Length: 251
Image (cartoon, rainbow, N blue to C red; front, side):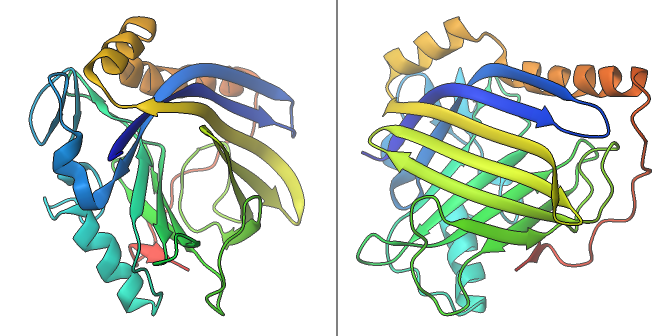
């Protein structure tokens, strides 16, 4: 299988300074980067318009470089041995439009063990930053392991560029879950997750997902602004956007 369509739920839960929780149904893709061309069908295309599509320029170098070349060059630079498959978890373009708040690159060794995850984060200002998650000694990442990263990139105006992220990834059968918790001074502030069940990315699955969630990617952007308005009305402290970090990724 070279591509999967995953239907599920995104959840956000803010713990302080005010409680705030929301969830909504979404679908996303899991793409095997070594065989992207084999994933195409009547309703899913690479680098051209379709009901669903994936453009190389939406990820990685964002200059049209094949994503498999970009991720392997990054891992080589960081001395991480990735001789197996890389799977990219991301939203597709729906009728030509997409916004990916976060995409995950799952990088495997030759034996199939997970050796690194790259969390590629985007904000609504058109900026991007990648957090490279891997153990310094190169040991495999096990299901449910907690991986930490210092927050360096502005995402929400209602959170400062300070504190830490805790990432956890689990997979049981066809059920996938990615969880990101934001912590300030070691205390949880925001809990987020995306969970879904995978099936092959066929034309029928693509059509069914779009009928169930029409214009889903536009809804992601609209939802971000709606929830921001709700926080502003509740007088949650506002933080101005700083300059982005000088490096495109951090480890």
